[in-house]
Amino acid sequence: MSSAWALAGPVIPLVLAVVVLRRHANQRWCTVIAIWASLVWLGECDLTWHLVMQWRMWAVLLDVTNLIAASSAWDSVIWLREHPHMVPFRYYGWWSLFWAALLGIALAHNLALAWLAVEFSTLTSGALIIEVGDRHALEAAWKYILIASVGLIMGLIGLVFLYASLRSQNLGWAILNYQNLHAQFSHIAPMIRTLATVFIVAGFGTKAGLVPFHTWLPDAHSEAPSPVSGLLSGVLLGLSLFTVVRFVEAVPTARGAFLSGSHLLTIFGTLSVVVGALALLVQRDIKRLLAYSSIEQVGIMAVAAGLGTKAAVGLALWQFALHALIKSSVFYGAGHLSVLYQTQRLTKITGLLARYPVGAVGWAVGILALAGLPPLGLAYSEWLIFRQLWQHHAYLVIGLVAAALTVTFAALVYHLMRTLWRDMDALAPASPASEVH
Image (cartoon, rainbow, N blue to C red):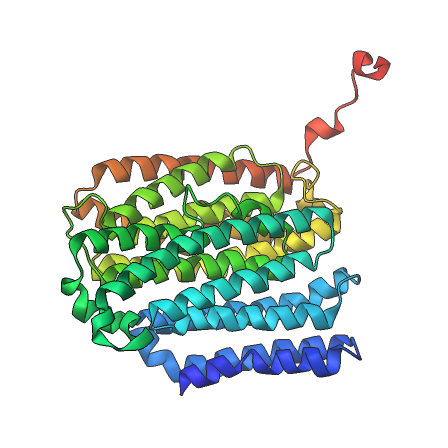
């Protein structure tokens, strides 16, 4: 019942986009879509609340997806008002299909269906980036679609290996149900299982933004409409990662094997945390800053999931939910700041506290939450993840991740300080030498 209600959610916005907004681009209909998305989340949340309290993975993923979709719908009302060149019926058409793709990933109990939903999310979100209409957006969308599709081809190869190994069951695509894979994984040759794991982790890891498959992410997230960036960073990355987690749980490989799913998640997750943290130091674009923060956060989720225990996977889910709420909100704020200052350059977005004090407080809370400042939510979940790592004697991972999170805190606080107060370097009078030149 909850699945049917959730999947019906994108239908109304799609119908309104095609039938009504195509002829009458009225802001009131945009508000109607936002109200509907909120009702869908409230209704579905009421149906699945007991499952969420039991920390069922699909229920948590579904609730978070619909919550962020509702917030994205409300932000879209403001964002479209700020960008009158956008065509509402095309925007909401692709937005509705993107929401449907995210729900498909969250609800898929079959690896092949999850692959199709992830691929569909690439096409729909890529179209939303193109709708921005400038050269940079077109370049970012092309890069995103190309790299993500190449990654998903690797994932498809992994699916083919699994299907070929179990084709004697004559179950059709039901062979790739997670439940069936878990029941039959011992019948898959260890070499085939290892190869499939490598291809699937790399393929879906590309859409999750794990290093070294992350190169599309900063461009796509920085050029996408801000309500879409909230869904991309807050929801899609996590859904793609937990598709990998569900597969690794269903088809485990020996923990002693170097290329086990758990080891791959730990390795790619640690790399993502380190690279994302270092990249934060040199960012000059406000949305690229948040995009690299997403890489770092997905890395933390992957490190936790790589431990493979029920408690660690639960903490990864907790990290996903908190990150989705915080990152989507901060992306929405970044979009409005870009309009307010007519630029995405961090060096030009200064003096926010004096110019827009209410927004400055919200921006500061969001950035400090991403930085891991106690008692904000991410600080607590990250501490519990460290506790799990310590209990499993992952001392090298603890050292690398702790150092990276220290760099993350320093970088985000540095950028926050320059945003809140006016940049004194920009106000300094030019030297005589510079005036001559």
